[in-house]
Picture 1 (cartoon, rainbow, N blue to C red):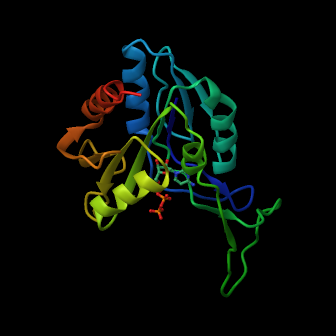
Picture 2: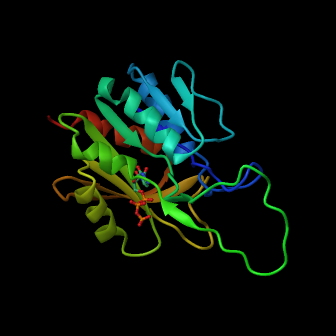
Length: 207
Ligand code: CTP
């Protein structure tokens, strides 16, 4: 199972909170997994990407919808690659009507979304879990902390740079950390190349 893309958290029927995720990396992983003969379910937030051939796809919008879709299918999965950029917050109460313009300051109250990967990690059993981390600082220590907290087998971390960013980038520098703390730097790789590396590492995990 692969998740990809951003989530959108409604503010009113017209507006939402989201992030710059394009979903490309997750779609590449789903495509490569299918190429290797796996049965693949791709749970995707809104993207502009063509779904890979032969992959079953479920499109969701919000973090809560993504959590539902993941939980519904997780029992059949032996590996989850959680590439989605899930919004950490949602509006406390989305308005059913368009919020009209008004002069002066406006406050939007946010509440926390569930951490889907952490919930799955709590009872993962033999399932292989791959997570991602996007950081602006302390890449290595933050990645390892997330790997431990979410009970992951592998985490891929990259740094967000103000100039180049990472979203939609053609080539990226990634740090891969496994559950034994082994760190591998993967410099200047395309997302298709990284998808192969991720899946090679997944198949090398001995349960
Ligand atoms: N993730 C998730 N549910 C969330 C937030 C994140 O399942 N509500 C998953 C992401 O898909 C990713 C991993 O957790 O695989 C790490 O996501 P990231 O946003 O880097 O980390 P957070 O745990 O949200 O921590 P922070 O935003 O504080 O860095």
